[in-house]
Amino acid sequence: MSEKLTITPIGYLRCAKSLKFNARHQPNESQSETNVIELLSGDIYQKALLDLDGFDRIWLIGWFHLNQAWRPQVLPPRGPAKRRGVFATRSPHRPNPISITPVQLLEIKKNKLILGPCDLIDGTPIFDIKPYIPSYDSFPEAKAGWIDEVDAELKAPPSYQIIYSPLALEQRQWLSEKWSIDFSERLQEILSRDPSPHRTRRIRARKGDLFDIGCGAWYAVFEITGKTITILHLKPSFALKFLNDPLRPVIPDKQAQLAFRATWPECLD
Ligand SMILES: C[S@@+](CC[C@H](N)C(=O)[O-])C[C@H]1O[C@@H](n2cnc3c(N)ncnc32)[C@H](O)[C@@H]1O
Image (cartoon, rainbow, N blue to C red; front, side, top):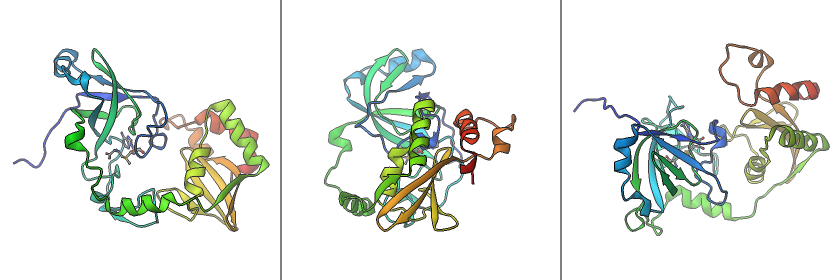
C-alpha cells in the first residue's frame, strides 16, 4: 500500500463566505443561506447525480484547503478552556484536513447542487457526495462525551451582560450601515458565556485591566466589571504597513479598515 493516495475534487463549494471567520462551526439551520456545489466535468457527474433528488440531505466530503498545520490536541471554541484530542473534535486542523457536513439539498440544476446552510467557505474542494440516510446515519441516543457536558453547561443562562459605550455603539453602527460588517452576534455569544483569555476564541488580556477579542479583521476592546462587560471601542486588526502593501494578497475588509483608521485615529492602539 502506498503511503500517499491521490484524490481529485469532483467540484468546489461556492458561497458568499470567503473568510474562515465567516463560516459557522457547524451549519446554522435557523438562518437561511444558500450554498452551491459546482461539479466539474459536467457530463460524467450529471449521470452520477441520478436519483439523488429524492434525498433531503447529503453528506459533503471536502478538504479544509486553507489549513496546513495540525496538532494532536486542540482548544475547541466552545466550553471550558481545555485541550481535547483532535480526533475527539470537529477541528478543521487535522492530519488529513477532511471535512464532513450533512447539508440540505434544495435543488439540482445540471452540474450545480443548491444547498442550505453550510460551515465551509467559498472554494472548498469537494471530493464526494453521499446521501444522508437517517436510518443509517442518525443515532440520537448515542453519547457525545465532552460535547454532552458542554451542551449541558450552555443550557444555563449566560453569566455576563454586554453593554456598548457610546463610542463603540457609534462604531458598530458605522461598520454595519456603511460596510455591512457586523460581529455583534459573535461578541454576544462568546463574551456573555466566558470573557476570559482563550486562544481559539481570540480573547487576549491587554494593559490596564483591559481585554480584546478578535472577530475576523477586527478587534473589540472591552473591560469587565463584576458581571458586566463594556465594549469600549472597536479597532481594525491589520497594521497600516500591511494595508498599504500592494504586494500583500487579499486583506479582508481592507477599505473599511483604512476608512476606520482615518475616522477614529485615537482607537488604533
Ligand atoms: C469546525 S469545522 C467543522 C466542519 C465539519 N462540520 C466537519 O466536522 O468536518 C468548520 C470550520 O472550519 C473552517 N473552514 C471552513 N471551510 C474551510 C476551508 N476550506 N479551509 C479551512 N478552514 C475552513 C471555518 O472556520 C468553520 O467555522
